[in-house]
Image 1 (tube, rainbow, N blue to C red):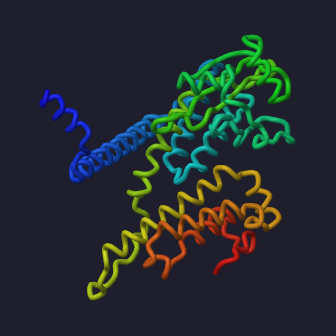
Image 2 (tube, rainbow, N blue to C red; image 1 turned 180 degrees about the vertical axis):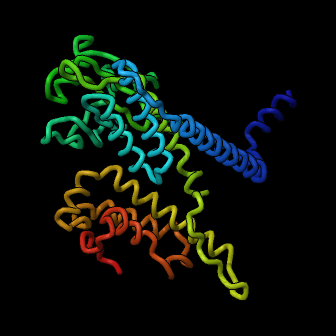
Length: 333
């Protein structure tokens, strides 16, 4: 009886702080190792993709296959060069458009699929205005729930027919949805279809592209922490000048956090950003997002860095305004 009571007491007693801290450190190390592994996997895939075929035969099937492999090779290089989420996702949509008549990337947010970027649709098509519920049985939801590619046609189900109608244009002959699995969840779903009597179509290659994009997104934290060396190498400080390693680390962390915050703004506000660049009123259009990220930056970054450098402002001007400070007109100096 006393043994059982003691066992229950032990189960109720929290683990010592040192043990919990050790468990947290172990989990962090596992995540870093996983990121390193995926970064290495991405590098190997890119190396394989670089071996592009040299198709000399006039056989149309061979030529088509060669073009598909070349598209994959180009996309692999784009993923390898990507430095933020928006860049990788933008490259995915652009490259996928060479393998299908129309493509649209849906970001999974809360309980809906929200359009982010598209190619091949009518000029007045606005992907950001497309929002579809997750709680349905169309191929988007199936791809998300099954964590795998789903192929269909409008005739296959009423839900897929309704999706095709919502996207407009002629009824597609073939439809596919591919999930973008990032770490432990499906973050987005790539939709593609084939319309008309011909045109490009390679559902399998679209799946490969989505997998490459997912690998690239997962490897971003490791690649940002260990960027490739650039040439020429920066000048080393004179030996008589003291370099504070802690100060250097604080500045590196601030730069990475600034890049992350700005890439999130780009990811969810592409249409408003394009309009803001044209009319030079980016801040007015994205005031809530920019101010919220500015507050987060101020809370997260060391005061020692805030007193000497404003990396968040630099990223806003460099990325959002594409170097044109007059297009964003930030209210703080």
